[in-house]
Image (cartoon, rainbow, N blue to C red; front, side, top):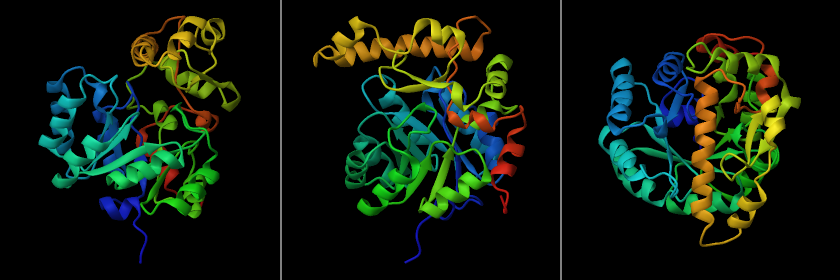
Length: 317
């Protein structure tokens, strides 16, 4: 039987997703990606109101009939989840990417409508759970991913999942060149999800300082912090990050050990972290917290998104 790859499932030219990035992905980026033969997704939380989210989906659909997706945070920290899921059901993007929670309700709503559901996973246990729930693919987030990262190296994670689940696997983390794409596909991935290098695209609506940091800093400057969301998040080790440290405070650690308070503390930490990231993305200040992954090593200039895709899809890397 022919393996189902991302390009075959969605009817696109290349098996590549321009990954949904919080406060970064926008309709310009999605439309440019679709015009280049790849697909893209954006976080529903990038839009403050349901009206704005619906308008964004409709804007992309008016531009092209090519498939794109919406990323939903499906845990309790996302109080907009129910409304966002209803919007997805009403407007029917080609796929949904679920993150940070149980995708059961999302799968039950979307599958009967023909909307594919791809679930972020970082280990085998969770991958097996979402497969049992009916996920169409898993997005295997490895330890080279930017933002909320995984713990397992790329090949080890893909091999582990391939041996134990039967649904296709999308590789996510550390992919920045055509050679990286080919290596992931050779490992058995059905496609790849690429994020960090697209922050340095002309279409991204972040500050020039953020984009320039991606050019100026390298892989050695990426560190993990738990101060922003309670979960491991990769950021550039700017002087401000060095000043505030990367570990949760003693009070936060104590509270996170209390099973009754844990979800509320994580919500407070996440909301505070979201505000810090939002300020860094949209304002030029000393207090800069810029999310990125190790693949910034391969960013050498700020370019149109189409040029970045062109390099990723080069036939002979």
